[in-house]
Amino acid sequence: MAKKVLIIDDDPEVGKIVKAILKPLDLTLYQGYSGPEGLKLAYEIHPDLVILDVMMPDMDGFDVCTRLREMSTVPILMLTARSNERDIVQGFNVGVDDFVKKPFNKNEFEARVRALLRRSKNSASSASSYITHYADSVLEIDLEKQVVKIHGELVDLSPREFSLLACLVRDQGRIITHRELVREIWGEQYAMDSSLSSLYVYYLRKKLKDGENGHQYIKTLWGRGYWFEPRPEE
Picture 1 (tube, helix red, strand yellow):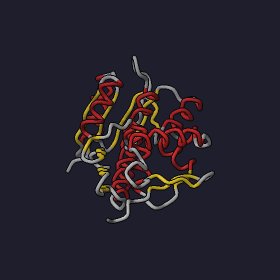
Picture 2: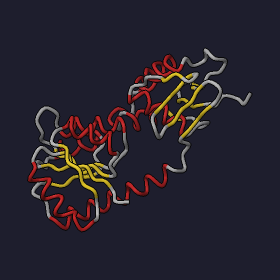
Picture 3: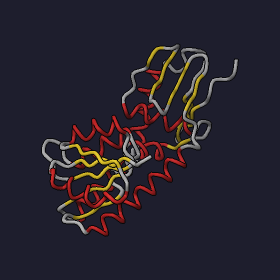
Picture 4: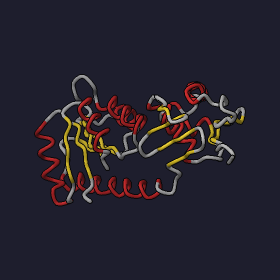
């Protein structure tokens, strides 16, 4: 199956150039012409790679990247006409994987795309070893479909709440530190702020009614972190 690449750039000419360069790679290419349109497409098609412009009206590439990271670990290649260190640092902090400066060299651009697509493939293979479903007599979690139910009723979780739950469920039984949780969900720049994980664990417990049905799923090791404990078999 051809890999899906999503271009988010308000300039149609950039899309044409990217499509011409990547045509030999047998990819399916999509383009969103604004940040909101690109995010909608990302949610619908689940791309293997996002090529993202920095300078766009209404929502710039950094904001788009932040939103993408709330729902996906897809590799992101950022296109920028600016090359100052501040922009690059900001990009990496919000989750960009690599940069290409406009105007870009064909061979370099293709090589970077190939490298990120390989990374996407490896990440998918690695992720397949994680737990993706959990179910007991009370709670059902489907990480692939992003569905959570209590007694068959859907639980409305925000993207960050779901990401937090997914992180705990995938590695259930292992203590995940505050820093690991914050780094994965909010980014490296917030890694030292343990109050974020504490606050969102509080939100998550309330929505899951954790402890109200005879079992507490999210356990705390004070000063270190949290773990997900499955309900004992009845």
